[in-house]
Image 1 (tube, one colour):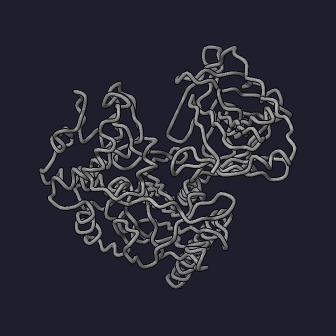
Image 2 (tube, rainbow, N blue to C red):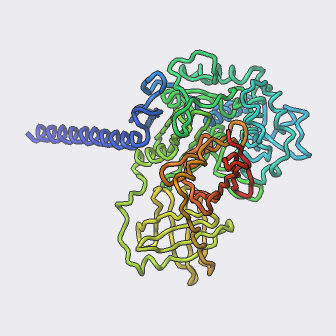
Image 3 (tube, rainbow, N blue to C red):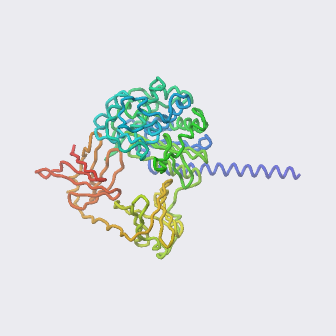
Length: 550
């Protein structure tokens, strides 16, 4: 009788556990559905997303359209250009060749490209992998827009950027660098005796059955290819770029299912030994000892103090984001087929939800008195010589960075801790030696600021410009080949959108001069003798960029 009762109780406990797990999974699915469907609409460009834990899929769905012109819905089988996630494949290829004794991380690039002009500096494979080489990134060269549609061989395209002045000495700074990974692709070819596309196909894709992954091509028929788009006033087909140019820095195509195969293979040391792959996940340091929060092909970060390994990608028409949480063995991959739909924030929110470290919700803010809020009002000078201003208006605390006109609301989670609406950026305030101190936390990045007597800048005065005048500013202005600034007017407001970027509001300081609040930038319009708008000037970060109207 007692055994029978025990068995009944055990069955009941197991049933309850199964119901709980099923209910939890359904809750997670519904929450992720909401996160994605809020941004990706059924009649617009789409998204494909996958979430896995311990290699098992928890979530796999797609929203929106894979092809707007043919009205084809997005599916989880769709194939995307993954952009800079390609760098993971390049770094692992280098580590495979390292294990085979075919190269060293301390090899200088002149071993592989003897005539490369290093200006007497020692630039190593390690520097290339970590974006610390100082070589000029070709995507930051203004003339890149003029050549981006031309097919080139790797060595020929290296000639395009190799004579550019170096940005800094090797190891002195971290600066994200596509030229470095392009050179790594050539090194793979030189050392292995086979082309980069063939190496990736045979040594990686074929080995783990990634049948929906490719070295990118515009001419090859690729099953389930999602078309790429951009958006200004309306959706347009993405600008063409020869995929010989992103190369080892950004030319791979894949699906969410294949990316899970890739991540599982990395986690289980399929390609290289554990001690070798760990080199890819090491937080390397500059010559001065500062950490760069980057390994080899992966960046290192945190979600609410839980370490992550991640990388995003951007290429005309496509954006991607992959996040791996080692302690939870959770992987999130999100692909978008429009340069206008950023997946990074959504992937981060989904990953946080999956590991039960959800992003901050305004509804969970605590109530503090005016006196408690006033405790932390003031200007704080940070280690990196940046000032941040904390102000109080009508019971709401705001944060403003020096040089930025935008005020961000911050919400109390305790009497000394405040979080931005974005959900993953926060302040921890304290008193040290009688001085107010602010710890600014942007995920893995930490900055400490000390109270100073400097005052916050006054808000720039905004004037009203008539809707008729604003309408005359509309048009597409070419900053450089392949990079435009599109100006649109909606009622009594003007908006600007750069190629592949989000749309931002412009505010008038003069009838022909406008400023942005999201960044420190100004736009000035120019007329001809007839009073017609023919050009504009963009002032940003000390740069003056003239743009003519198309």
